Image (cartoon, rainbow, N blue to C red; front, side, top):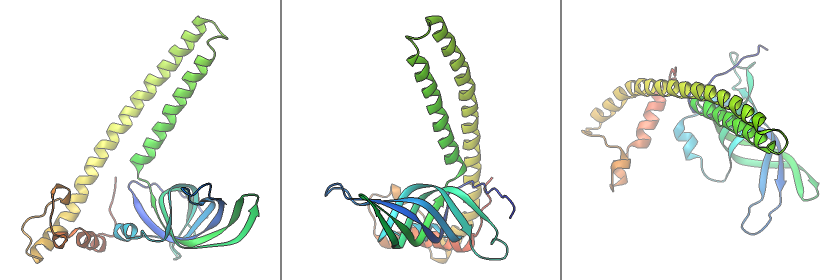
Amino acid sequence: MNNSKIKLLKNIHFRGDLNGTYQASPIVNTNNDSKISLIETTISKTEICSELDFFNQNQNILEYTKVEDVTIKLADNKDLQDYRFVEDITNLKICDVSLSDQIKDGTQTFGVIQGNAMFTLKKEEELKIDKFKTNDNKFKDEENKILAKRNLISKEEINKEFKLLQVKFQKYRKEKSKEIDELKVKKNKNIINFLNLINPIIEKYMADNSIYILLDKKNIFIASKDYDITNNLIELIDNQIKTIEIK
């Protein structure tokens, strides 16, 4: 199998079969639910699902904001069967959950978890924001280490170390600002390209259904649900646009 890297440039929703191991903590008090933490997770037969399917799955599920180092195996066909990768995923939803092979260790329970999963892979700008947060914390840690040595080395040495750190931080801040500006330009271009793709679909829907004006519902104070065509448009766009090139 070739070592392949997959770079995602937007939020994409997926579904697949989840298998893994878990650790469950007991209920501490009546206000806390039993917590099931995923230890190792594999999602196989993975395929893209629509945004509508993803957000409509909200009942009888386990939810995780972020799960790290998940092994993802793509849907089984001759073009994709050899591809798998390890990725941090977000917004994981697991339904039809099955827990088995439980082993007790004191107050903890370990076992096997299976179910149908839906999840999101993060877009490029979010991944970079995570990187910025990590680097910001590193500079803060370095500053704290220097401050911790105030009573161990001379004032001149402290000032020298602070000046070196400041030079490094100024360089990093310029690079960070440049990357953020580039992301903003990319984002604006991609929004324009996306609107150019969906506008003809929306205009045809309006013409076919004798709709003369389309309003953003966040700007509407109150209206009948019969006038809300959001789900209709999402489904129509999902059916007609299978792939979007994000640069």
